[in-house]
Each structure stands twice: as C-alpha cells, then as structure tokens.
Length: 223
Image (cartoon, rainbow, N blue to C red; front, top):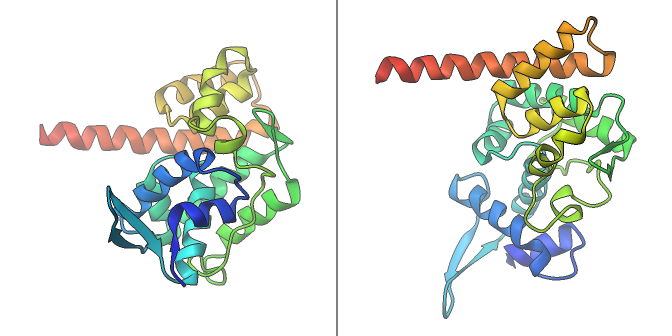
C-alpha cells in the first residue's frame, strides 16, 4: 500500500473535506518529524508529499492522533509508544479525566470505549500500539467537533472561567499549565475533602507539577 497522509486521515476519521483535516495533518507531520510515524516523501510540483506505506503506519497514525487529543506534546505521545512507564502514566491520567464524566466540553464520551481505551494502554505486554488500533471514546474527534484549529485542551482552558472547580482543574491539566493546576488542587483541598471524581486527577497533577519543578531546577543548575 502507498497512501497520502491527508487521504488516510480523511478515511480514518470519516472527514469529508481536506480543509477539516488541516489540524490533524499538521499534527501528523509532527509525528513524522520526531520519528514516530514512518513515512516516505515524494517531491511534487510545489512541495513534498508524504506517504504511509504499510498497515503498521496506518495504525500508528490513528493511535497517535487519537492520543494527541489529550496530550498535545508530540514528544510525549511518542514516549507513550516507546516507554512502558510513560504509557502506564498516560493510562492513569486518562482514567482520572474520564472519572464520572459523560462529556468533555460538550463532546460526548462513549463510556465503554473510554474504559477500553484505558485498559488497552494498561496492557503493555499484550496490546501493541503499532499494530492494534485504540478504541476512540469520541463519536467525533474533539479537534474536529470543536474547531478546525482548536485542540480540546485549548477550548477547555478558554472556557475555564465558567467552569466549576473540577472542570477548571481539568482545563489547566489539559493545557499542561501545571502551576495553575497545582493552585487549583490547593483550593480544592482547602475546601475540605476532595470530591471523589477529582482525586485521581489531583494526584496526577501533583506528580506532573513535581516533575516540572525538578526539570526547572535541573535547568537552573546548567545556567
């Protein structure tokens, strides 16, 4: 097989027009650049065209774009594929995001598929991310359902002023604003017992915030 990346995206996610797939195509190219998605280039009249040439590449494209709805950093998505510890951490974080939720910013969640998605990520020995497609918990990818150029975390953050404490924490988490997320954790804990639906998310935020602080301290040592 030999398929252009934009064509594959349209087929994988049932997109009618090329314009709708622009944000996904740009994200896919970030995975080509960081070596996650194997692809071949062919020089066309005005620019290079990129092709996926095997079934594993199609599966990688599907899974990487699905995961990027939650994890915007291409390097982190690649690490989910390559590092079991990162993959298990991502599963726990998604489990925290899905807890007691039927929707994320009005995008309906398919609850059985959400549970299955977490279980597949947890099955590091039996589920190969390069050979088996992850189930999508969305009827329509958030990148498409919200806006052609707005990721899920950006939209959540933009609306955070009107969200309750738990959703505001979710917005900060998805935007990877660890300082703001940590402040919101403090606020939730200051009100008394953290709601059951937020406990796993608070734990995930605390862990990410510590990692961010440790990284900043490491950079300071090199300055």
